[in-house]
Length: 290
Image (cartoon, rainbow, N blue to C red; front, side, top):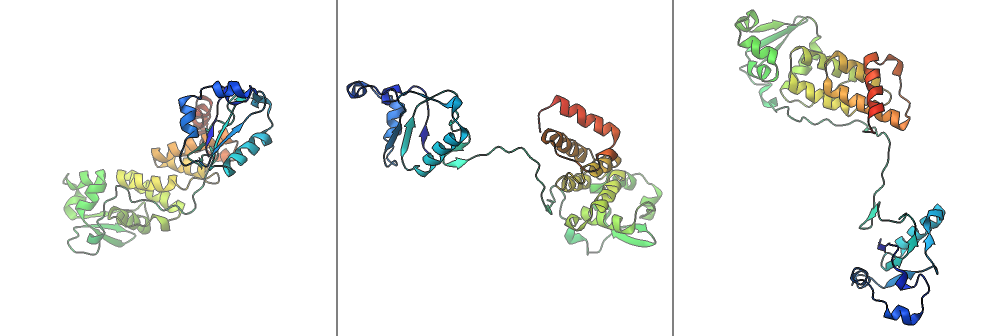
């Protein structure tokens, strides 16, 4: 859309000056360059006998001018008006319309990125595994180096002369076989999170938190952040608190603050951790929407 707006174009005819005076008026270089655009089919001047007072113009009139200008976009259009620049190209540039929307978007079935999780999948089915994790009388064979790379707890264990390091095995009794196996496979770089339920993801976070697996924890948190909605944000926030998942906590807080700004109803707000509720309210009162 080609629109040049301003309130200083009285010489063009908006005051209905005489033809002789109009011919004597010098068009500013900026406007002359606008008129002489070789891509234009011509120039359209709009005048009202006096400046149009746009402060009192109905929105439908403004919309009509915008629509007409869009349909005549092959021409250069010049007009003058008085008042605030309601037709200023704030949202329209280079024939592209930019609309600012306040709202909450939900992404269905987001696909998480592996991010910084390195790809060791090729090692999963190879030999030379030198450590065993025992869960529910089942065994998972792993490489010490992979566990040590992802877990500070295992790293310290393998370098401390502890019983587990000498015997090359560890029994885990507080997590299920499925959760441990899935976490280990994440360490090897398998793309599995899209198949996990939210409950499973939080159990994985609990395991990652206990064994200080920062990369895995960040990966899972990023996946859960993409799933936040008004129906689960309170559940997510509580679980994030329980698993020391600070990235997810911050995302839940920002989401809730924006819900307050948007007056969006949130499910199960009554079960949200009381301290977290207070922090959300404090942030809402002291910040603009995020």
